[in-house]
Image (cartoon, rainbow, N blue to C red; front, top):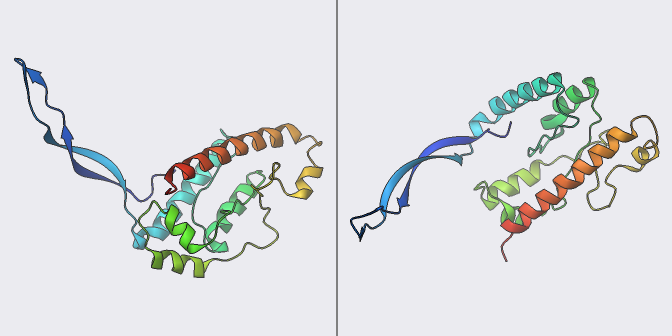
Length: 184
């Protein structure tokens, strides 16, 4: 589902020449098609609608014990439909907010080409999620909210433990990816 804003473009790359008759050819330009991120603000709502449709299909298929929706979700309305759909489908729903909210820090981690002004606008649009949405705290060893820890010994404990392990692995993978992108 992570294909939105990806566009196929042609790029010129240098290709190593082949060796023939003992001579070495120099590098020559070759046109290659590659997928590249290209943000189109006018398509935001259409892409979000399409993503919600794909999300519903994924939940209906029931092939996964958990599903991650990774999006900016600046306003509660941006994720409320996803939350409601997942709850209706029997999923336990958690929000994971970025541990950093400083626009300058976000701009430093930005891989999508947003300007500092764009990120400042997004920060001004940010809405804190109401308390009814359970939030994971990735700064703790057990990210589940306190009330969720109490129910871990119930019949759902196995499913929750699997979820926690998968979430921990995802968190470590995200951290590793961000650490690689972070300027020294």
